[in-house]
Structures are given as C-alpha cells and as structure tokens.
Image (cartoon, rainbow, N blue to C red):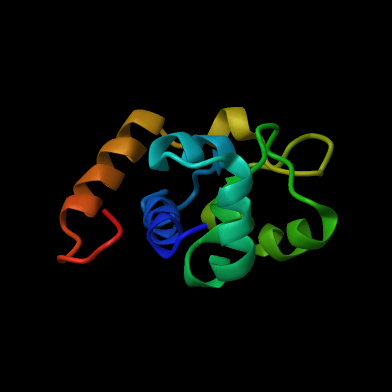
Length: 116
C-alpha cells in the first residue's frame, strides 16, 4: 500500500469517537481501500492511533489482540459480546455517516502534500 493510502487509513481511524468501534470494512469503504489493507496499516502503524476501535464485522479480535484491547474498551465503556470474544458491535458501532463526514472534513484540513 502506498504511503498516502496508509495515511488516509490512519486519519479515518483517528475520527472514531471514544467508546465506539467500526469494522475494517467500514474504514475501507470510507477511505477507498480494501479491508485487508486497513488491517495491514493497523498492524504496522496502529500504535499511532486508537487501533482497538477497529474490529472485524462481528466485533471480534484475535485472542492476543483482544487481551490488549480489553482494558481500553473498559476505560471507554465499550460493551463486550456475550461470548467474550469481542465487543457488542451492534451496540457500540460508530455512526458511519458521521465518521465519513468527519473523515472528509479532516482530509480537507490536511496541508498540501497530504494524503488527499
């Protein structure tokens, strides 16, 4: 993935409000990349953003990542799924229209040579 696309993924993730989550595919649709590309960016550069706010479509994270996300979810009030494998995404999914709007507004604020 090129540098600009990676920067756009990170910018989109920065717009997710605390206490809310979205799926990799949600970020992908907003940014114009694939869900696997979103995952790759977060794997490499997730430490720069609130990576724990991006989950799979069912709200699940792999066990090793889930253990790192749980304290962050608890601090933000993200409800857990009844099976304990992830979050209750239906109850805490961010408003995707608002997220897209916030992303595009932030994209417009980037200086020249930005990820636009």
